[in-house]
Image (cartoon, rainbow, N blue to C red; front, side):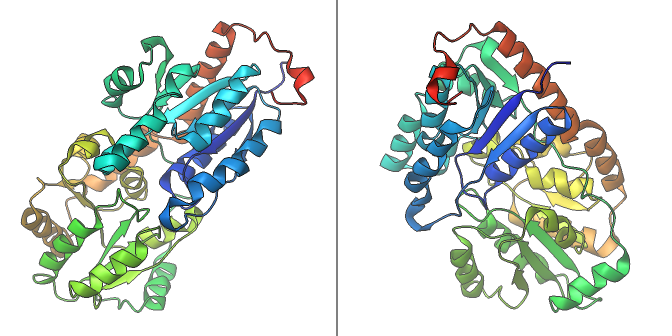
Length: 376
């Protein structure tokens, strides 16, 4: 029986980011499929993005982890350098591109971000992406050949997605000062530049004028958490908004289950057309009633969510209607769809098969890995 593939997974972003969570989900899925996987632990996010230069030293230690395959999430230099060195010593290199990072910024910072990412993808053996809209973008922007591209969908880790009893739900709400008669809207995200929480504040504020006793729970932390807390105060939303701060991934579902409805909203801007919502999938896996707009990937779930256009008033009205009437049950179909089609275990098995194919097609490295002190 062949030895299991040794795979290292590393994310360019901080430990409290969606990218790191995706890295952990990919790793777990590959392990379930039979690989031996090591996740290189990231750093917590730091002010002024200092975790990027500091993490270079941390990640280069992974050079001495023996592996057959290395997967880097996002082609930023702190991970790109590691991938390119590993490739020299015969390791199969995979880079995952899960959005257009430099699209969230403008000016010189966006230009620098884009320039720093360009060298890595075309030099890797395999480039994965989640939404099909990214495929032509990666091909044209990074110069990656079609045969190196592989769609790696955004999945759901179903193990923690089991129903909770009403007593524990009620106790958790009470611990946050939310009465049983109050209607609770939940939102989960990594609070960084990609979060559209400012727009959601406006939507929830409008809804609160027509839904007496409405409360809003923001699940998650991130580098912009303090800014959003200040924004809530400035908008007069602090009385109805509760921030949890950073929540370990295994506990996020417990907070989401508290909600009478969940909200997901993407601003109608180009960068959001290339995103896939991890939280939307997790919310549906829990059977939550999800109110969302129809930008990008969200439109795909129109049959399972309470979906509108992007006008804030329209979304707010839909939210009020769902809270008042309880919805029509479409969330049950959404839960069945996500659990049937987007299970990370199935996605991981297909990814491992594709990686095995890529290794078989890859020419052997001229460098003897055994002579490199275990760099392979």
